[in-house]
Length: 258
Image (cartoon, rainbow, N blue to C red; front, side, top):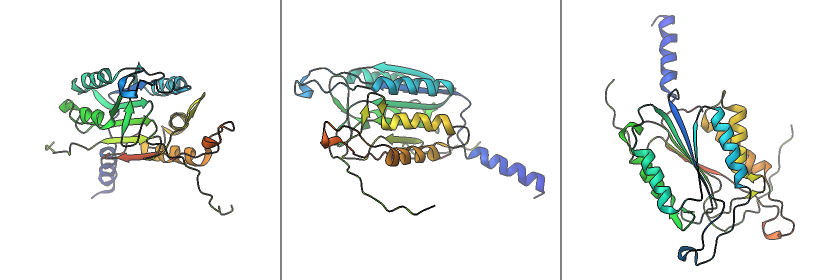
């Protein structure tokens, strides 16, 4: 192959390696600050999530600057959350490049997230998205889950550092990425300035979205939370000086740049 043709072919191959992000992009935030006293919560109101408004403000600013249409819902009940997701995913998304969802709430072991009135399975959400309009097939669907996944506490472990045209059948579960704020069974942390994971995610996206794809970005987010974030609560030693490790699972089939 002549050199000019080889260079052109390489460029075409690189284009195929990245999702087309030229269309409409959405970020849908389900934010929970306070909850209701219901049977599902044992008639005890779950703790108010102080600082979550900082996460919302930062996500809105960062993603709006990147050209995303940001939709924010506050303190919705279970039925309302699923209905909003169903309505969005049943629309024709031929003009859409990417769907992002952020769930800022309490959570439990096994995948439960808290709506304003009850816990529900995160899997209920991903099923709605996976079975959405056919125009979503082959397009990235991202989920940012800021929630506890259990009650265990991570003291951390000390390490010694060294010095110095044809049709294509795509699997139903393809093109999805989920970034959890913590690993299964463990607590996730937040203070009056926001949560560890969401704040770092927004900072790293702002710094590196032009150079790096999402997997490089998330790796830095996970490193910053793991190495640079530690709880500070000297009045409550059970959660003072503790660590947190975000976790990512994905079935992306291309590289993605915001």
